[in-house]
Length: 240
Image 1: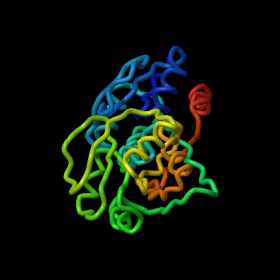
Image 2 (image 1 turned 90 degrees about the vertical axis):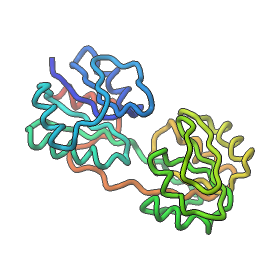
Image 3 (image 1 turned 60 degrees about the horizontal axis):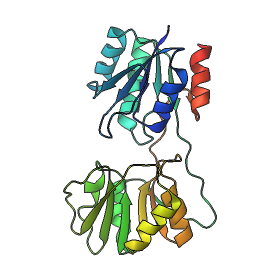
């Protein structure tokens, strides 16, 4: 049975592991920050130590195929996967999450980085809903004159001037997102262009409320073959 390494703690990675279980030997690699889902096969938690460490792991574990189903903003691990698979001669596929469609009613300001978002934020609102993840929140530390509602998986102190943390785990409903924004008087949403269904409700809620969205663009996609659905990734595995 072919041994496949699926990189990523995303919903797409979990769905793929479940879809191909029994037809291939699945090893799922997760960072573990969002908890450990119930997955078939083996689960590995933690980093590899760069591209060289990942290449060594692929060889030591006799991995025959790699699916990069990491978060669209996980550019570093994707780059490491491309380098490691090329060095080890292992076929690799990128499972890319489709981006959110932009509706005519959407009021998006597109920026290229968290730093640019922080610089633009005071010009767009005074009460911001920040949904960029715990690893990026510190980029808003220098923002003044804007109250920040920050959503995290778990509460923790943050290096921000004026903020409040709410915790939650996707998926979220449009109704709940709209109610949250209204309850806190939010007048601008700040998010990454992550795409996917699990967190799209905040975009719909902002649209319904007529709020501007400060949207951080994705980094360039990793090189190599890619598909945009779990079904297509499963077909790729079966065809090799």
